[in-house]
Every structure is written in C-alpha cells, then in structure tokens.
Length: 95
Length: 493
Image (cartoon, each protein chain N blue to C red):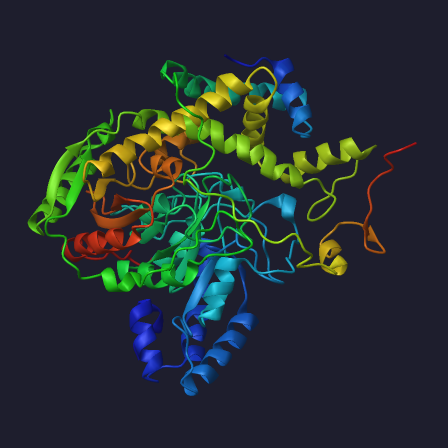
C-alpha cells in the first residue's frame, strides 16, 4: 500500500500537524518508503496467533480507589504558555 | 595529581569511602572538563553547576558522617528524557521549550537517594526517535572516537548519543539512558562503552517522557561492566506510579561479576548473519564465540525464525504508540505555543513548528496505521507478529539456552550527515536490526565493547538473556570484557 498526497494531508490533519503542499510531497515519499518496508509483514502466517498486548504475563496492579494525591494546581499550570487563576487559557472554542 | 575523571565508579567509590578524595573535588573535576569540552562534543544540553556542587557538598557531609549511600558522591549525567525537578527536561525537542517539571522521575530519584550527583542533562535524538543523535533540536553530538588518521566527525549513535559520548569522553562517571529499539546498546557499541537495557518492567518508566510505552525501558551507560551493574542496582525498583514495573527484589548485580560461565549454554542465532554484514562484524562475533568457549561455555546454534520481521514490526508498533503519546504536545499545558486563528490551527501550528521531521514522520505513520480501514492490516498484524518474535526466544530458552550472543550493530559508527542515511529513513532504521528484537520480546540485553575495527573504531557484542536474568548478562559480559579489555578514545576535543 502507498499513500498519495491527499492521504498525507488527511493524516497530517488527523495528527494536528500543519503541512504545506511542498512538505506533504516530501513526506509522502518518505512515508511510502517506510510503508514499503513494513509491507513484508503480510507474508507472515498469523493464523491462530494472539496479538501481543503485554510482553510479560502480568495482571495490572490496582490500588484502593481513594484520593492519594492532589492540591497541586499551581504545579499543574506552572509550565503552561498561558494561564489565569489556575486555568489553562486557550483561544475561544465556543461562539 | 591523577585525573579524577578517569576513575571508574567502583574506583571513585572506594576513594570517596577511604576519604582519599572528596565528592566536591570529583564534581569540580567533571564540571571543569565539561566546560572545556562541551562546545566541541555537544554532549550536554544543560549543565547544572550549582546543583551539582550543592549535591556534592551534601554527599561530603554524609560521607564524613559515615552515612554514604551506594553511589555517594558519584557524578552522573542524565538523558534529557528523564524529568528532573526544576531542571531542563525537553526530550531535546523544540515543542517542550522551557519545560521545567515540578517532579522527579523515579529512576533519577532512586539515584539521588543513593547519593549520586547530577552534572546536567544529556543530548539525545528528539523524543528518542533516531539512531545517530542527529534529530536533536540541539544539534548532533560528536562521537569522541575518530577513525585512524581522520578528523571527520562521526555520530555517537542514538538515541542516547549524549549519554554514550559523555561516558566515553570522561564527561561523567556514568549516565542514565533509555532504550526503545536499541537506543542504549547501539550508542554504547559506537563509543566503546557498556550499555544495558534491562527487562521490561525492571525500571520504573514514571517521569520518563514516553515514546513507545510497551517498549521503553531505562538503563545505564557506563565505562565498564562493573559500573553498569552498580548503576542498574540503584536505578531499578518497583514503583506504585508505574503499573508495569515489576515487584521483584533487585539483585546485587555486582556479585554476579567474576562468576564462571563454565557449562553455560550460549545460543548463536543463525538469522543474525544478515546479508551485507561487514566481515569485521562477523569476525568480532566469531572472536566472542571463541572467548566464551575458552571460558568453558557450551556454544549451540539456534534459530530465531522471525528475526527479520522485528524491525518492520517495530516501525508499526512504535509509531502507533508514539502518535498517541505525543498527542499531549498541543501548546496548552507546557512548552511551545504558536498562535492560530482558532484552537485547531493553534494545535497544528504549534506541532508543525515544535516537532522535527523524523518525529512528524513517526506520528503520521502511527496515525495512519491506527486509522479506520488500516488498523487490522498494519497494527493488528504487527501485534500478532510480535507474539511470534517473542515465542522464538521463549522456545530457545525453553530448550536450555542461558544466553544469546550476537553482534550489537551491523557496523561501526558512521559519519555525521551521512548521505545515504539521511535520504532514506529505512537505511537509518537498519542500525537497530540486532537490538530491536530484544525490545519486541521485553528481554534484557547488554552491549559490551569487544574490539576495534581496522579504522580503530569500537565494535560491540550483544548478550540477550531470559526475563529478569540480568545477572547472567553481567556475568557473561564480564567474561567478554576480561578477554577484550576496555577501550578509550584518543583525546582531540
């Protein structure tokens, strides 16, 4: 399978990465080189093989459902580009 | 006076305990050589002079009181991927500009709790995506090694290129690193250093910037096998903040050194004899086999039939996980923000300006293979092949193999801005052909220097072990090291 220019632009949009026409063309070449390389996986017979979701057979550890951390609003927003009173500021979303 | 930066961790540890040297002297010695060398090597992206001196003073106080920890006063470098409280943490990406976390990664917290001293943050490929350290926003790291009679700059490998270069050039006593497809073992091989990727789950991933969560593991890069064992002992732990960290006691890895490999079964996988592999790599492999045989190990030929599919599987699974993990860099919560006419354009502009080409490529490949209509053909297929890759190893170990010996890389270090590598991403990916299988199966792997090629550049051998059997890796790597010796670059910087 290979991707065309429109697919690259659609995937860029899904990835939330702005691309120019020119960049998309360069990306298409390189992405197609990668997709060409991974194509060989199709020749592997995977009949009856379970997909791997964890390299080690482990049950996820769970903890008691209680508050164990918090009250760190200042820390949470400390690195944000724009904040006001411990809120993240973003461009207007709802008209 | 001897050059304190030439001491290994085990040597410095002894001199500190015996009060022959102080942690402050040792730290100042390192800060001095970093300040003199870093313009040329570009191994550090941030040097924490004040913090290092404060930590060293505290170490001296603890040593004086007889309360020194396992790494008391040992100056270390930290890969920029680890969150360090109040200190530059950007995964060497533009998108994390100015990010100074309010928390400390579990691995680095473990090191500081044992008394280690932080010298600064080390250069790396952006978000650990690369095999040459050339994708860093902060520019490439130069390998301290050069070919005989040449002054051409070589890459230190990647993604932990800054870690490997700093250890090799004596700019830190040891370094933290991470390995998703070979990012500890390949740069270690390119710089004549020792690097171990422990079993998935051995070190906590908490506070390490995530690339591909089912593959990422932290580990040390060190000057010799003993130092690597000392560092891993401190780095490893179970952690309630990482549910994939394993609740198993951390062994005293150093105690495994010097133990015999007599009767040990060493597997030699025939599929690692790849087309186009240089004669020098094949010769090194044969030399490694001969050393282990002389030490009493039994050499057995084994087959890992799905080896050739490991790299293509990796280039579906790791971008898929990356596309999800890197969704958080949106210009809202941290780092760079580039404005747009609305919030979506702000996201798009921020990510277009903040990510480098290789990172964008992997996010987009990951988004594509996870998208509707392609998920089964790519992602699900890759997850199934991953099961088969792991089964190959399971079968080999079930048949009685204790450890697997392979080359670490298909070549020695190559030049910065290599034309072939930069024109085709797949050429660069092939660097990890021998290391990536280990991540796919979650196993431990160590790269140990085993010799120099005709050009005088280091080459490494890789040992792969059973899950959580890092001790066998240290024991066997030590035998290789005893036979091969250790290797230091000629100083030109």
